[in-house]
Figure (spheres, one colour):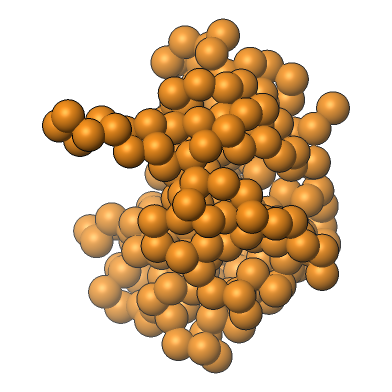
Length: 226
């Protein structure tokens, strides 16, 4: 069974009287342990796919299945549980709360779950050490470089041991050297067996994944293997 399956998924946005088709009957599979880049220019539909993969939006038509469960059969609470327990998000803008320390930002997913505190703290420390941020626990975001902020964001995404990590332009705000270091972290996580999906416009970034899905005008133009 694939981890995620899209079957003829379309997404239409209404802007006044205009209907904009962001996705047009897109079909693909993501297997557990995959490393895939969704690549395309601005407006291609790649961000729409990202939002649908993360249960942040719903399709206008077609079928999305997560571990064999149909998206349309889930209520809003069940979708929220999947987002908080099975999906880790990493964004271009880091999304760190400025008044919280690195450790506190990493612990944010715990707000939506109930685990023994000592266990959660142990997992947070483990995740921060994994990404090289174990010595920055009490720093605030404004005391960090861009690369350090992204490392903290990756640690936060790992806290609940998600089935899949979705990274939306994770190197977009970083210089090339720092970007390469962040991509090494994603490659290391994939080698551990994590499912990684990178959304990017950059072919060099996409080249770090085993598969590339090229999206254009709301359709999958091609699928490429590294």
